[in-house]
Amino acid sequence: MAIFKRSAKTPSGFDWAGLAWMFLFFWYFSGITQLLIQLTDTSGFAGFRQAFVMSGIWLAPMLIFPRKTRVIAAVIGVVLWACSMASLGYFFIYQQEFSQSVIFIMFESNVSEAGEYMTQYFAWWIVLAFIAHTAFAIFLWTRLRPVYLPRGRAWVMATALLVAIIGYPLAKQMARHDDVASGFEAFESRIEPAVPWQMLVAYHRYTQQLDSMQGMLTSSSNIAPLKNLKDQQANLPTTLVLVIGESTNRGRMHLYGYPRDTTPNLDALKDQLQVFNNVITPRPYTIEALQQVLTFADEENPDLYLKTPSIVSVMKQAGYKTFWITNQQTMTKRNTMLTTFSEQADEQVYLNNNRNQNAAQYDGDVIEPFNKALADAAPRKLIVVHLLGTHMSYQYRYPKTFDKFTDRTGVPAGVRDDQLPTYNSYDNAVLYNDFVVSSLIKDYARTDPNGFLLYLSDHGEDVFDSAGHSTLGRNENKPTAPMYTIPFMAWASPKWRASHDWNFTAALDRPYSSSHLIHTWADLAGLSFDELDRSKSLVSDSFKVRPLMIGNPYEREQKALIDFSLMKPKAAPTVVKQ
Ligand SMILES: [Zn+2]
Image (cartoon, rainbow, N blue to C red; front, side, top):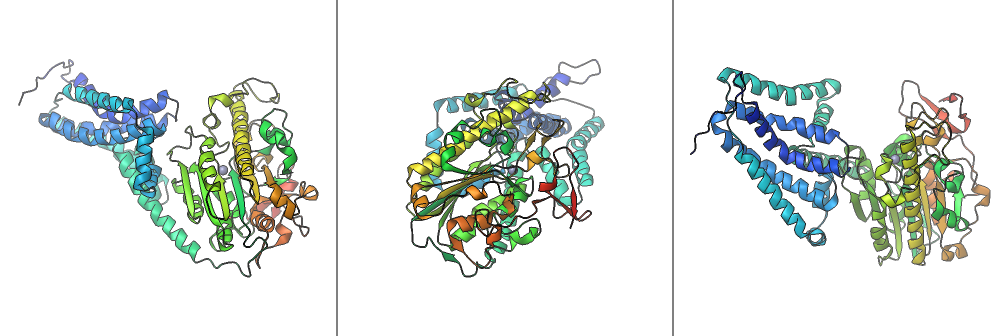
C-alpha cells in the first residue's frame, strides 16, 4: 500500500487544504442534491445549510485515525453514496426532496405500481447522471490524504467537532422542549437534510407515524355508528364530491367581488353554482379546522372529533364507496390526523411526498386520479379531494403560465412595494386554484352524474388584506377577517336538480361556520339520523342563526371565544366570555 506524503502545510504545520478535500468529499453526497434543490428553486436554504454543517462530523474519525484515511473514507463514502443515489434519483423523478413520506408511499404502493413508476420515469440521462455522480465521488476520494495533528490535539479537535455539530444542538433542543421526545424530534429535523440521516430519520418517523395512526384508527373504529340512519337516495346510483381547499380567502376571489380577475373559470360557471357569501371557518389552521369541519366537533365541543363519526364514515355507513385524493403532505407529524381521516376511506391517493411545505407542488396533479375515481364501477361513491390550494409559499403553488398578476393594477394603495411580489403571487395562486376547482367541476359534470360537488376552503389567509396591510398569514391570537372568510359553493348535476330542491337563494347570505358542515352535508345528501341537527344545516328551512365562534377552544387561561360577526374591521375583537 502506498505511503501518503505529508504535504502542503501552512506555516503552523496544519494541512488545511487536506482538510478541505476531506470535507468536500463528505459534503458532496448531501450537497449535490441540496445544490440541485437550490438551483431549481424547489425549496428553501435551510436544508442546504444543515447538510453543510452536518457533513463536518465525518472529519472527526479522519483526524483521530489519519493512517486509515482512505479506508475509513471509503467505508463512510460507500454508505453516503448509496443514500445519495436514492435521494438524487428521487429528485430526478419527482423534483422533490426525499422524506419520510417517500417511505410511507413506498410501503403503501404495491410492487407493480412501483414498476410502473420506474418505467414511466426512466430516462437514459438518469443513468448517465448516476455514472457521472459516482465518477466524481471516486475522483474526490483519490484526492484525500491524511491530515496529521499531534495525538492530543487530534482528540480535542474531533471532540470539539462532535460537540459543536451534534452535542450542542441536541442539548439546546432538549432544553427548549418540555419533553425528551419533542426535543429529539426537533434535533432530527435539523439533521434530516444530510445523508445518511435522512434515511434513518425518515424511517424512524415513519414507524412513529404508524404507531400513532394505529392508535387513532383503533379509537375511531370504536366510534359508535349513527342511530336510525335513513337515506332518501338508498339504492340510487349517486356520486358526491367534497373538494377541500387550502388557505383561500374568498376576499381575493373575483367571484366574491375582488376587483382583480382571479376567478375567470368559476365566474363563467356562476349561473350553475350556489355561491354562499357568509361562511367562515372556526379556526385558521388546517388540522384544527378540519377536525371540526369533517366531524360533529365544533368550538363548543372540540373533542367530539375523536368520539363521533366523520363525513367519510357517515357516507360509508350509508353504503358509499369512499375515495380520498390528497395533494397535502401526508406524513408530517402534524398531519397524522389528516392521514387518519384519509385512512377511513376505502381508497386513497397520496400525491405530495415533500418534506418541506415550501416546495413546488401543483394541484393539477389531482385531476387524473379524480377522473379515475369518477370512472370507478361502484354505483355509490363519495370522492374527497384535498387540495394544497393557495398555501404559502404562494409562488410554489402555480406553474409559470399562471403568473398573470405582476404589477400594481388592482392592488390596494396601502400595500408596500416590498410586499407586492407576495401579494401578487397569492393572486396568481388563487387564479390557478380557480383553474383546478373549475376543472374538477367540469370533469365531474362530464360524467353526467347523479349528485353534487361542494367546495370550501379549510380557512382563509391574510395577505396584506386587513387594515394597515401589515398582516401576512394567520394568527389565532391576532385574528383578522381574511383568515376566516372562506369560499363555499356547490354545483349539482341536472339529474340531481330534477329530483331535489336546489334553490338556495334564501340561504346564500346566512352567517355560517364550517364547523357545522357535517349537518349541511348530510342534509344535502338526503340522509337523516338521530345526531343530525337541521338547525345547523345551512340549506335547511329549520336553519337557526348562531354566533360564529372562533378562537382556540383549548385556551384554558382565558376561556374566551370570539364571535366573528361582532368583529369590526378596525376595532379590537369583541370578547364573549364563555
Ligand atoms: Zn390549511
